Length: 102
Image (cartoon, rainbow, N blue to C red; front, side):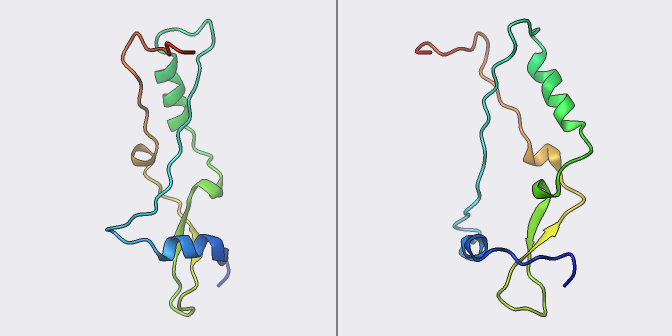
């Protein structure tokens, strides 16, 4: 069982209830404000730098696993082959973007 720590009960209960018809996925949204002197390609350059990073914390490479020897208990498995193109997406408003009420 080395290398496969058990998942906290709070995490595993959340995932055990998930089905294809009722996904419990969690997503994140981050809003960035470019520096004042940023060029028009700032967001694209920032995204490309992010995607070219090769050192990523294991916290962001975990997926649930269920060992055969321990029924019902989920573990965390660190995945070395994550499809970052699928999981990290960049969306932007068309120009001129802005917030009227800001």
